[in-house]
Every structure is written in C-alpha cells, then in structure tokens.
Image (tube, rainbow, N blue to C red):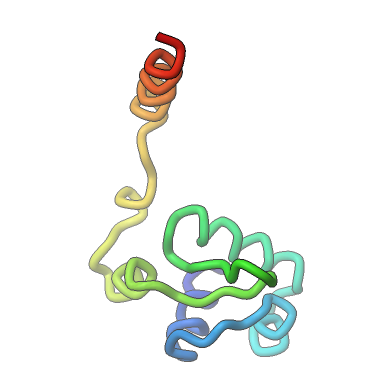
Length: 94
C-alpha cells in the first residue's frame, strides 16, 4: 500500500493532500491511508503539514520510488537505536 500512496503523492508534485482525499483516488480506506502516511512520515519519505493532517512527498520518497533506496535503507537496526538512546541518556545525566 505504501508504494501507491507514494506514487500518488509524487504525481501531485509537492502539493499537500489529506488522507481523506487520497482514499477517494486509491482503493484503500481513509484510516488505512492515514496510518500508512504517518508511517511514511516517520521514515522521512513524506512530510506532514504542521497545521493539518495533510502530506506531501519529499526527495527521500522520490528516491525510494526510483529504486535509489531500499527498505533496508529506511530501517535502523534496533541495537544501534538502543545504544544511541543509552548514550543520549548518559550524556543528559552526567
């Protein structure tokens, strides 16, 4: 489902669009589209508008569509995240 959402946003060339409007043009429900858009935003493939729940594609999302990024490029190993969190906590406390 992520690829069609990204492709739809890419076709809009940077325009903001709400999940409710996307689902009118895609074969998915509003809740599913909204959930996937939030996940895509977490991975830096789309940008969420600061005032409303609307999204637009960013360069990283375009790179993913053009096979310049893999799924592995979007995921960080959990061990590194845990180490990073521990380091950050240590820095703040001491």
